[in-house]
Amino acid sequence: MSTTDEPDSTETDTAERHQQSPRRRGRRGIGVAIFTLLVAAVAVGGLWILTGAGNNAAVGAADKTPSATEAVQQGDLAGSTTVTGTLRYADRRSIQSATGGTITALPAEGAVISLGGRLYSVNNIPIFLLRGGLPAWRSFESGMDNGPDVKQLEESLRDLGHFSDEPDERFTWATVEAVKAWQDANGLDDTGTLPLGSFVFSSSDLRIGTVTVKVGDLVGAGTGLFDASSTTQIIETNIPLAEQQLAVIGAAVNVHLPGGATTTGVIESVGTPTEVDGATGQKQTMIPAVVALTDATATAAFQEAAVSVDVPSERRENVLSVPVGAILALTEDEFGVEVEYPDGTTTQVPVTLGLFAGGRVEVFGDGIEAGTLVVVPRR
Image 1: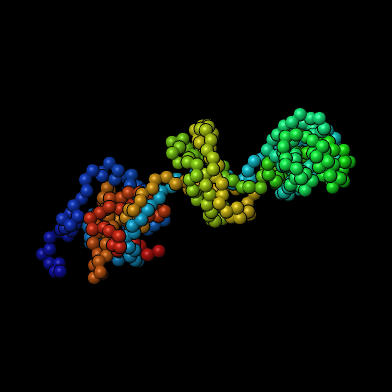
Image 2: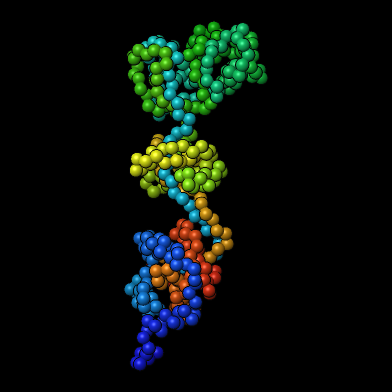
């Protein structure tokens, strides 16, 4: 095309663009916010900021920025909100001495104590771990009242190979014989009774945390000896009250671990709103949530760590999307993409933006369909 006696290029190009794709109205109210969001995307996606010179400016920008093309995709687009959380072991508790005396044995920090294992010793008398969700509150002996704790004891003795009857809530002759057999196997006097304080009930194996006393210390009943937890890791997080719709039991989440590794999990429980100290020191109302990990091996290297959790938020199904880097800022409140045709020519096409998610953005525009090639900066 000859450039002599040509009308002002800015006016001509602007007019041509408006003829090809009339500007959409009613977007000025959100234009500034979207523009700010897109400018922020420069750091991660290579957004093209074009101003004032229409298609000629687009050609100039493209000449300076190595580019490639990518097809418009059609499919589901899911957004997420990122919250912070803490990876730690679940069911933390403090193990206290049930009797007074001298500590003669302690577990090592990080050790795992299983059913029938020795937790610690006072006056050279070992305290054992038995299985059950109810805490111990009384001794076990002939003539005692029936109760669910008796069933817990019999289930533990059965799993240890010393009780062959069906566990129930009655402390019978068969229970006495099973207790004697277990005591004999552990080098104890086979009395058939278990004094309160000689055992600890736990619904799972115990992982030993921080030990706060030393062998040889004289302790009283109720003295804290060490922290313990289950062997299962969880993530505890807080979701802002304003986004409480995200706190959905069963929702799948992505977890970002220290060092850049990622794994997945599921929200398994949601608490009631509570006030916590915010980053600025002001109180914030948050909803506590617990995330169960889907792959326990992914976090095995961590005892406790700060993590971030991507909680699913808005979702669009069967929509068109392009990489964020493909978006052109045509004006302060008009955006577009540069479409490449089979003959290698390109033109700017105004688009309306929808959901941003995973480095992509939902787009609407005349002539935009699945498979349309759009220009993106080459990384």
